[in-house]
Image 1 (tube, helix red, strand yellow):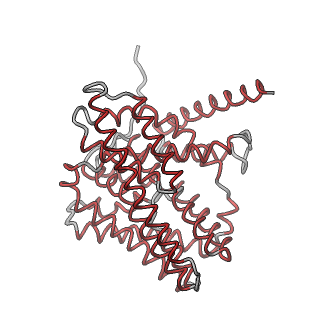
Image 2 (cartoon, one colour):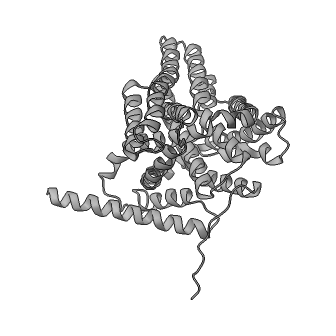
Image 3 (tube, one colour):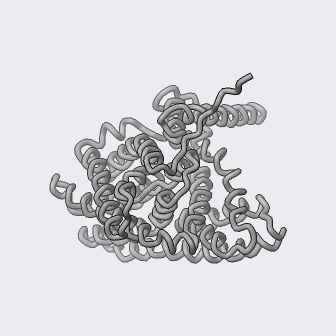
Amino acid sequence: MQDYATHHILITFGALFMLGLVADLLGRHTPLPRVTLLIISGFLIGPEALNWLPSFTQQWFPILTDIALAMIGFLLGQSLTKNKLKRMGRPILGISLGVMFMTSILMFSGLLLLGAPLELALIFAAIAPATAPAPVVDVTQQLNAKGPLTDTLLGIVAVDDAWGLLLFSLLLVSAAFLAGEDQSLFSLYSGLWELGGALALGLALGFPMAYLSGHIYPGKSTQAEVLGLVLLCAGLAEWLGVSYILSAMVMGTIVANFTKHHRHRPFEDMQRFEWPLLILFFLLAGAQLQLEALQQAGIFGLAYILLRVLGRITGSYLGAQWARCEAKNYHYLGLAMLPHAGIPIGMALVAINHFPEYQSVILSVILGSTIAFELIGPPITRAILIRSGEGHPVKFKAHKK
């Protein structure tokens, strides 16, 4: 029986990695990013369609999510170096805050006008600003995008988790207070702990990692060292109940700024591990999608999608105007941050603990909008980067004899 289970696991791993290779190849010849192709492929082989995935893959997804997002967080830290922040600090600050506030304000006011209860409008306004970093980062890597717009986008995505956690905590407390819930202050303390604890953990691991990167083997970085510390960070964050993305991002930021020798080497080592894990992560994420959630979302679900898109557009435009960004592409940068999974789903589950009476509507709207944004978000990110001239699609060329 053990041999039977072992060969099933090995075959499943091999098949999923080959499916990831096919998605990568198709992504080079079509306008669809490989992220979208992987999510669609995962949906097709998942329980909603062909149901080809063995049941034990359901146990992998939570672990893969923690590992993949911790890696993404660490790599995002590379975007927040002192030199980049000096050049891009004002656009990153202006656009990130503009997108967050406008998305939240428009979501809250729009849902109130549609007749949503005050507490429900606050909950959705708290969740809507969050961005899923993994699809955005993968699109930039697939396009080998480099330049000021890409640096600004990655910087915004990096700080988005911190802003989002803080706003979510404050608005959830407000909703709980209006509903007369006794544990509203506990919600605030939990949110502040998740944010502050993540910062402390990232700092505690970041400085030793920066030192080790230059002293174990001078001028080099070992893959075991990088992977070990990132996994340790993810595990400790999960155990302490803090944001593992933010913890890993802070650690990556410290490494990028304080490593003395070949500071890019730890991130290059991490990228060698990243893509195989992201193949599994995106495929299994696609397998989790349920079309029933999209059907049940109803008018609130449609409004949530439209208001979130509008909030991204207006927020990035106002933020770019404040930051005095001359290039027009900055005005539409909010559209490059449409992917909406992982963190929003976690936020929805937290909100349901406080408001179980809204469980069905919260889950249907968030899960339904996740399907929409995970499918349309990466192609829009890709189009914006290509239009800016910083993204360069890679295509295979036939070898001539």
